[in-house]
Image 1 (cartoon, rainbow, N blue to C red):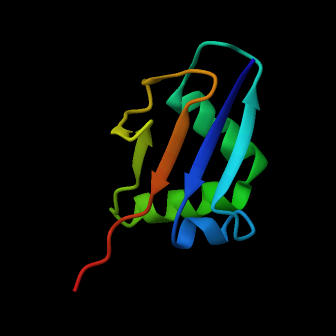
Image 2: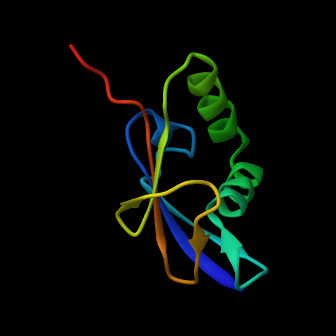
Length: 91
């Protein structure tokens, strides 16, 4: 079983009841970032809806694993930290 911490900032935090960090457990020792995100979205459907809306508007949501940019097929292990970063706003 893998436990991973997921950090959320800005508007993404609002979709998980204002929490800046959540922890999820996955019933497999070897998982991908995509599988971990799918599990997160199961637990927080509002977050999934928000991310989908952002992506449909052509905005890029960035995922990192242990501080490094990651794709959905990146391996995630027990104790890793995932961050989900919303698109940067500019002006």
